[in-house]
Amino acid sequence: MQDVRYDRSLLLSEPKRNAVLTLGEVARYGRDSFGDPDYVSLYGLRPAEWYDRGVRIRGRTAVECTRDRLGELIGRDVGRVVHLAPYGGVTVVDLFAGSANTLFWIQRHFPSCRAVGFELDRDVLRATRQNISLLELDLELHGVDYRTGLASLTLEEDELLVAFVAPPWGEALSSSGLDLGSTSPPVAEIVDALDASFPSPLLVAIQIYEQVDAASLSDVERRFEWSMSTAYAIDAPGTNHGLLLGSMRWTPEL
Image (cartoon, rainbow, N blue to C red):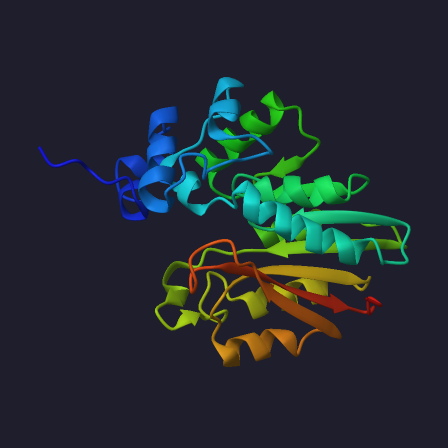
């Protein structure tokens, strides 16, 4: 019998998509797809470590999560800008939290912040809540869509809101790159919702790809008073993820 390759297409198909993976399956996915059995490291732990502590993930989470190596870089760059903000407090919100690993790493680089995540998928929500409880992480997770979550969020007058934006890419990612106008929902729509919901200063952190559709990127950037983008060279050339940072109603002095 031919050996089955544990890759993205397998883990996103039924029944693996929503199945809880064994440690062996997690390691095999990392090894078969990236040459690294520890690829799906989460919450600062290698797979064997988080699995031993009771953390469990589904097939889709293994594929879609922001693994530690990328999450740490995102958290570092967000934290570097947040530390420059002349405001009394900081709330960080992940609008599409998933595993909440990005939220974990942003908080790790700015420990005094309040960290809040929104996740609409009930299965993912349940699993992530259990994982952060087992690891005793100081993260809030709410089972609502991002618009409902933003409407319920309250800030102090001198508080900075940091929003991490990584909506499902779906068909927005193609051989020509990532089209920010074709994500679900479009990134510009999310930025407009943030702008309309909060008159206070905002820092928006958007997960992007090494290759981005130029028109869609410009459409998002024009909404900010200041912005910068970077790609993280941690994967094969042409397959790297990156980060677009943009501010509203304040300008960081880097």
